[in-house]
Image 1 (cartoon, rainbow, N blue to C red):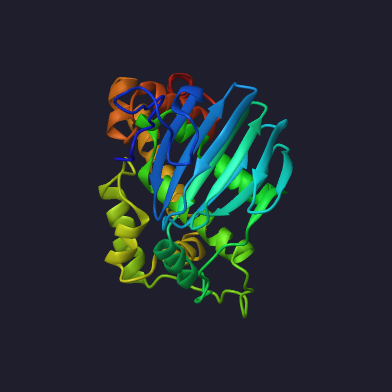
Image 2: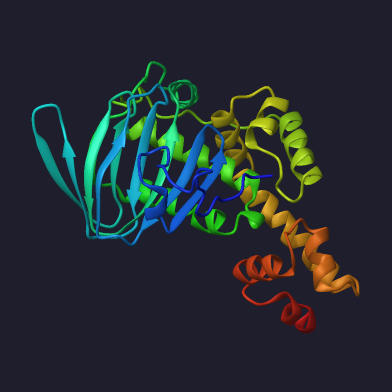
Length: 303
């Protein structure tokens, strides 16, 4: 299953800092999720000031932060000078973790963050037809609505990890990684991605694997490897073949199965939820209502 959120995780002594240098005792929100080649975090504090936030240089790769709120300011200390940056909602920063970092924070914040290793960056770049991308452009407090919207889609999974769908997380992480290398990797694709479709054999195999894991507890990588395709190629080809992403296609199949059970059986809503791969009845009701436009109990009575 998807790794669960870690809220208020602390060292054994109850003190210390997280991997980005922020004191644990200042964080009221501390969540984590793993998807594809990216690690996702949500960090929040209500403190008006946190001084001397330090991150020593490491080989971890790159960190990308997206501010969900306005009003946060950072004074970043460089070797011979300091710079001050004000963050608006949906503004981002990109840091090379190979460089040490020191800053003072002013104003509360709520950041969505992701971390990408050098090896992962290389894999994503190759799958995006941009081989040779080895770094991301350094930015601070720059507006990035596209990236912000992509990463914001992970908030429900971070807040309700028991309902997090592995297929959805992996698929979204792939889309985010591709956008990062295309927009911030310092290179432009030589040509537009050519049309790609799955063979009938690969389409049948992919759909069969997805249905065997109707709860979505299978990664895009597992399905793409079964088809002997790269993850990025598989997602694009599946979408061009079916008109839907793998997650959308499987969600549609789950809702179709739920409708058949609701109409043709006396199974309880809880049993229908489990049979269709949902975490519980509450999760099923939220998703069904969002897709169909009414709660499953009402739909059963009306049908």
